[in-house]
Image (cartoon, rainbow over all chains, first blue to last red; front, top):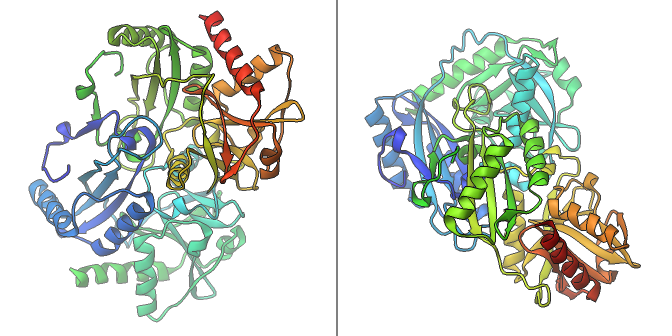
Length: 276
Length: 276
């Protein structure tokens, strides 16, 4: 927290912290492979863009952040991990005005990485959430600490026995999943939703697009309605935590499966090893 | 905090608290007059409705909440105050899923009430924010801890030398101000925006509607575009903190002023005294 290594039980913030009161902050979750945060630069760029948009100063420079991350990973002996950075505007006077709130807080925490086996990802059921995101909401394009929309969508999926929810925007087109980006294979073209649909630009989404192009795949950004997913050769989600996850069902209807998704996941793992 | 009276410096929450991480919670701000929280029932009803919507258990019953509030007011010797209740879903496993997050946290805090003189409210400048709220977003109808939209709108107003921002919904009609509800006088009818515009139903808004009807005023809910405010006999905002605040300008253009707003504010104060 703000540069000091402290035990989880002592890692606390004031009840007047603006992220506790209003979700007034941003976060990043970064996959650590063999002790190295993957695509660190891209995550920091997104954090910096969001902080500039919200007018929050990041209290450490990049070198300090990287050093603190390395210390946290080493101290916890957790080389396969998820590194979470949380930035809050900190404590300020009462009310929405940001004036006088000039002591931002940065917290880094480490969680064990989820176990993901590209060869056997199992069934992963999606629903279409009744919760929608506003197509042109600039806030939705940053990884802010306002996540109730995503929490409600996820709860809706779980209450229906599914794993994850897809969110439509207010124009009725799919934007993203609650905590991941959406891809599908349509006529041997790898498709994902355009950023203009109001989604968060996932770091893994960007990496997958690069990777697929490197593999010689045809790649495009395309707006998406339900029939495209129902007719797709495969539908999958991407996030830095689980990497690539093929969906088995959408709203109770089985989706087609393609071995190409597993090929892409193998290539992803290879690229991670190479990047190390 | 959760029933214990503790000093501000010790009032802290875990950095894994979901309201710090995601704004996963709700709040109420209640005006305390002469030691008594005003319209307590209505505030608790709204908190309960929001908690039911989000699936968060309120860890105290109403009697315990009222007793804790009274203790806080007495202990701080602050009979003219704003009492803030913050409810968080508490700490849970990593990620958006609410499963396993079963230890909600309730914090009550007291702030000095702002000084408001109904006879001299001064100039209060509004702007129309570029930030919009989604018309049909159910989340926006509860007082959640996701307040970045309102924070951005307020910042926009302040950066333009104004005091407060009005928010349009995605259909281009006015919904509310960043931290208050919107009223105007049109042909001797007191108007406010309908709840269906996507706004938060202010407790003070409800009280003003009752009060105006009791005074024999014509009252209606009406959708609102900018020309209605520009042509209104008066435009004012309502919130439990400042009660009633007439607006002097909108987007740099002077608004008309009416002594009726001051009459209403005097009636408000009388009703508060009577309610005590």
